[in-house]
Length: 242
Image (cartoon, rainbow, N blue to C red; front, side, top):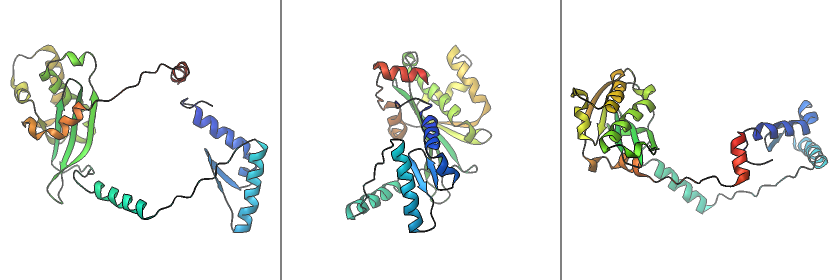
């Protein structure tokens, strides 16, 4: 069975259920994908039932890989402690709270659009990231002016964070000073005017911040994401069949 087909998991599970159907009915095993739980009340019963599982596996030509034991020694403990330390450092990802002060920081480049949803914590009065968002620009979007890209980044952020910000006041922090005057202009180009309609659903305040203070979101908009083109014929057929 090739990897990648969308029906592989269900097909494999059906095969395992068919192989061990008698033991399942008897309440001896609970199979899930390639893991099989053997139910037993004591050690002797467990060994007896294990033999039955091995026999059925052998009859159907199934191979069992015995896992190597994982050693949690000093080195592993040090790595685990280091991971916990890093996870507790700034910026700590927070949990969304409806009544907290909320900000959306946005930025754009020719390569991508990015935004961060942040809320001020009542514990330390600091802003904590709640949600990160970024995506690559399309071939058409790469032809937009920097101003249009900045506005597009804001619109994309509003769409992404809509469930969090609709019906509540929040701030839009952008590195594009021109956008702070967008909604007060009488004459807008067609594209900007169309995007501006999306802003009417929200209770927001627009603030400008210099680029040097927007490094956290600027980095998200400039990350180069490598995409591998599918050239292998087998992989192509797998993708087409999904």
